[in-house]
Image (cartoon, rainbow over all chains, first blue to last red; front, top):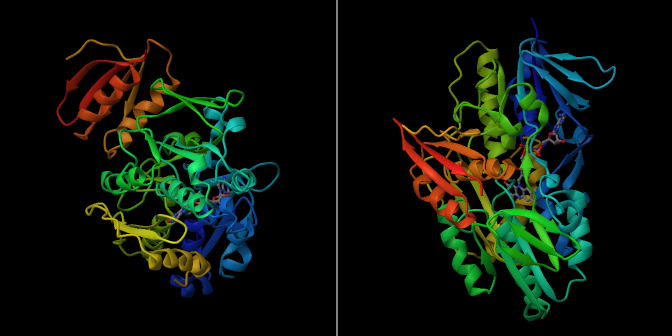
Length: 381
Length: 78
Ligand SMILES: Cc1cc2nc3c(=O)[nH]c(=O)nc-3n(C[C@H](O)[C@H](O)[C@H](O)COP(=O)(O)OP(=O)(O)OC[C@H]3O[C@@H](n4cnc5c(N)ncnc54)[C@H](O)[C@@H]3O)c2cc1C
């Protein structure tokens, strides 16, 4: 009997996994003992970290897009369609319209994050973001002509993709404005929902003095409640009002609705065992990347490591052996601290991060990683 | 034991800091004024995080109940 592995989501985690499995199970695929299907709701693979550079005019959105059929091994069946229902009892996925349902033996959910700006009144009209392709280009159009006033970067809600990216944005904006002789005419304020500037206390302790040194104002315990685009004011649940001229936010994030509808977890995140990545509420279902609720950052590096673990576990299960590979929480992040310097952190469930001193070399390492990412997606790195 | 009847419960047991506080804030955001939200958390950090945030946001922390392996926080939305 042919075992059918279905992966939903052709982003970082899903694509790395599909290629990993094609390599690992090449014999079984050739013998038709296994079939692998990757389903994505669009023909392109999108590499989101490029969006951080778009507002500063340093990258184009096209730099972060490649057709999935160029990246995915030919042994994988690629299907471009949006899954609209998951039935974990019948082990079946459904699509809109007349598209036939797909049955699976093993399901991996790698559907990533969805931006939900509509949860904050006024945000869609008043705020900018660099967490979507269209957001990053709209922000670029504003930022390139912004020469004076109050720039506010507000982190609304958590979890969100790449917890380092809000810090990176204000550090880069500060440096970029300095280089252009405009920093004295622009005030920068950074807001964060809890009592420090980052969720991880070690990263917060490292980042706060850099902000103070560079004159980046900080508002902690700031949970944005409402944006008034007419008066250009952002109000927090804690009762603080901030006037802005340019508002950049990390909008609220959620997963996809069908995860909750399938009873796999709340807010679109799948409840998983944080070591095995197996769904808690259903058999033969795994989740990885942003959609797996493990408590680690929503980062591409996490999705990459988790894909390796799920690949090993699935290969073992398909071969009838006990699955032993586990995920240890490993996370790697480069953190840009300006336009030509970056830091780097590495941590896991047991070990806390300790940010490296910012250097030009680390900045170039981040850019080099961004270029070589396409090899990662292909499963070569 | 408290006899406070919560309108909503957020079970953040197993989540690491600042997950429980963020889950609580999310629930309070959706609640009506006067609603009581109960947060279940097993991280000690919540014992400082939750009272500090309640004070900052002006919501009343009605009680903290110590249970076997976790704490229950009762917050009333202002
Ligand atoms: C500005 C920015 C900067 C970042 N910088 C970094 C960084 O420097 N380092 C780092 O490690 N991470 C970074 N990240 C985070 C990283 O991009 C994400 O964590 C990563 O993409 C998560 O991978 P994923 O596979 O879980 O989801 P994604 O890559 O988001 O892929 C999900 C895929 O699923 C598809 N999909 C969703 N629903 C359905 C459905 N119902 N049917 C079919 N397909 C569906 C989506 O279209 C998408 O293709 C950054 C993110 C942003 C926004």
